[in-house]
Image 1 (spheres, helix red, strand yellow):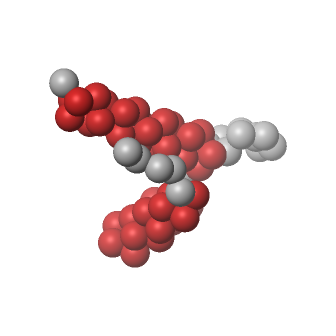
Image 2 (image 1 turned 90 degrees about the vertical axis):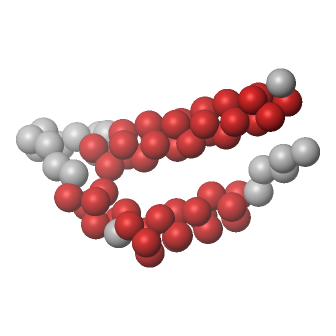
Amino acid sequence: MYKFLPKRLSNFFRYVNKVYGFSKILNSMKDKRPDAELTPQNIFLSAFICCLLRFGVRSKKQKTE
């Protein structure tokens, strides 16, 4: 059974940053709003994490079928 560990997420982001330069990609995201409460980086990270979680659920579901 899969057990969520907060350290896994930080290790994953450290890996993605090391291999793909994830922080550089995030820092390059800009928009034209002067004082945005939600930055493009936060919006992208939220969507990215949601996709990762959805992919994990989907792959687990396929294994059980």
